[in-house]
Amino acid sequence: MAPLTILVASYTDSIYTLSFDPIPLTGSPTLKLLARTTVGHHPSWIASHPSDKSLIYTGLEQADGEIVAIKYGRSGTIEEGDVVARAKSGGADPCTLLVTEDELIIGNYSSGTIATLPISTSTPYILSPNPWTLSMPFEHVGRNKARQSSSHPHQIFFNPLNQTEKELLVPDLGADKVWRLTKRSDGKWTICDHIDFEAGGGPRHVAARGTTLYTLLELTLKLAVHTFPPLPAPPTLLTSLFTLSASPIPDTMTAAEILLPEPNTSFPETFIYTSNRNDPHSEGDTIAIFSLAAGEGQPELVNEVRTGLTHVRGMAFGGDEDKYLIVGGVEGGGVKVFERIDGGKGLEEIAKLSADVVKCPTGFLWY
Image (tube, rainbow, N blue to C red; front, side, top):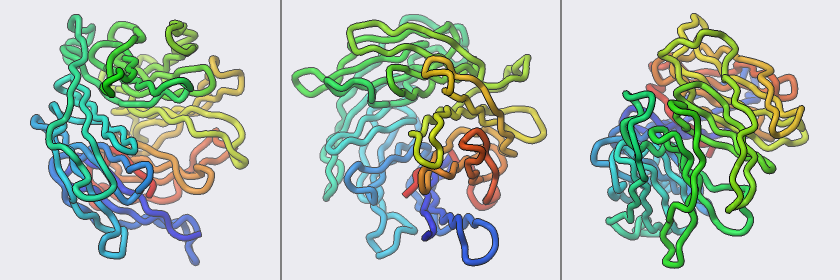
């Protein structure tokens, strides 16, 4: 197997390019730094174009939010990218992007806005300097006053369960809602419905499978599970589970990422993986693993893997049959690659880079 390339978003001014070799000619799996591409302040989220994976978009988390397009491979290698376009994000602190064939959809965390830009796979890549924007509704300050004083969209996610029209799901940490958006006749997105969550929960990211929606509540460290029928039928809350078994939960802890890889030949059983942050334990933050063996609506916490990392924000599956999981500690521990074991119920660390090499990693993209 040839070495795999991984791009790393960060809370620095750069996107890192790593090489992961799971089966070197001699020795153990290796993880190496190939290059870093300077793009600007805090490129915390990266996403590739669906038909041109060499075209990467990132958002710069700053008050005057900015979108950057980066092209890899122009020099004959994929190590370092070239910045090919920039545009305003339509708000403050863009923390999430969704790339379609001709549209970039942006979630601006601090300003509580969704924005779109027209894009293409050729020059000038971003077709307008002026994004269309939509301000998210906000009714009142939430239970967690420090984190819920305004709308905070934290993810833009296509609803894979809607087979009749394109529908966006937008977890709003500030409003304790997941907004549901569809397109109007003029091609602009509009809010058509929402899902309410427990006060102070802070929905951050979602995943879906079959007829079920899974929502990670950042502020209360819970996995909320809903039936998720097509519109206009309302969802029904089935259960809500903590993402760690220890109690009481320290006030400083939050949840960050949820992943739901497709089952395959090597891993036929379905598992949900969620990350917890700021665990005071000496062995670092945990990744919680939930089994769906009892059914889509009945996840069971079956394992908690200590990562040795601090403030696990981003993680992503990759490699053959999603065999590997790359994870980063924003505030310590660097970057590590884990291999799925025990049919996916467990994780084993097989390679790492220190925080001196990759600083403040926030997200990953298997190239």
